[in-house]
Amino acid sequence: MESANTPPLAREIADLVSRLAALGEQHGLDVGDALRAVQALEQQGSVTRVASWFVDAPPVLGVDAGKGGWVGALVAQGRCRVLVSPTLAGLVEMAREAAEVAVVAVDIPIGLPDSGRRQADVLARGALPGKASSVFTTLTRAAYQAGTYAEAREANLAATSGGLGAGAQSYGLRERVLDVDGYLRAARRAPAGRRVPVIEVHPELCFARMTGAPLLAGKRTPEGEQARCAALSSVGFPLPRVAAGPGYAADDLLDACAAAWSAARHALGLSESLPPEPEVFSDGIPAAIRV
View 1 (cartoon, rainbow, N blue to C red):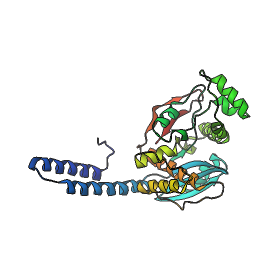
View 2 (cartoon, helix red, strand yellow):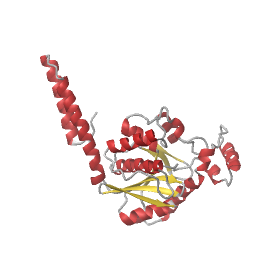
View 3 (tube, helix red, strand yellow):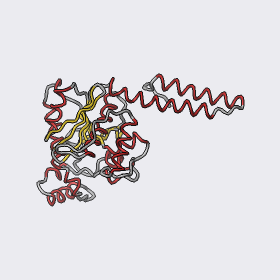
View 4 (cartoon, rainbow, N blue to C red):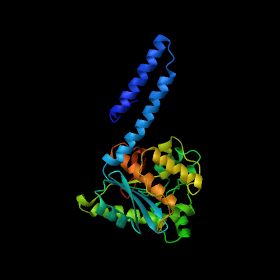
């Protein structure tokens, strides 16, 4: 079904497909070759239209965690620049010195629950058959504030009615989670002109949306890297040179690029939210994954 956001070219091609099919049925003609040609034109046009997002859309920043802190993919005027910083605040400031960033998309939980599971995590797993394990369970705020993993497990068990433990991988993100949480809390106190919208994304969801299905090849394998580069290229993303850099691996950079793709969609009002209505816990920060 078309929407008000459907580009004129897409509407024209969809109308042409409908009219060709109707003529074929009415006169008993085989219009299969013509339909396939028009649909191929539509696919080519789709890449062109998506590529134009990164020229016409405002600058955006996609962010992923690396061993040395954060790696960012700054997309502005159809080009992608790679940035690195030990803190999210430093990365955003670096990006804003280069461009008027409209949206920051980060692959880290935003909005920490007081108890139980976040709907964002549950829905993201459901949308990634075969890759559900890539979505880590977000721990409670009490667990992330615990100084050791053992204390985090106890805190999460005490804070959840079902007695949920704390996964080591989820707790391993503690430093990054608290960095983002601190940045968002500080941003509330900043002047309105200094605030930049920050959204949560999950790269595997981004890639699944680009290709129509989850990418099952591991992101650290040659096959996985190739598939992710192809997915980004298919939507017209201006890929930088994909390689490891100071404090980040090649897959971290590709995840940051996927995050930037969702940031561009969000800036243009095209992103979707999981859940549709973000949850809000006691921290007052809306919790939802955008894609």
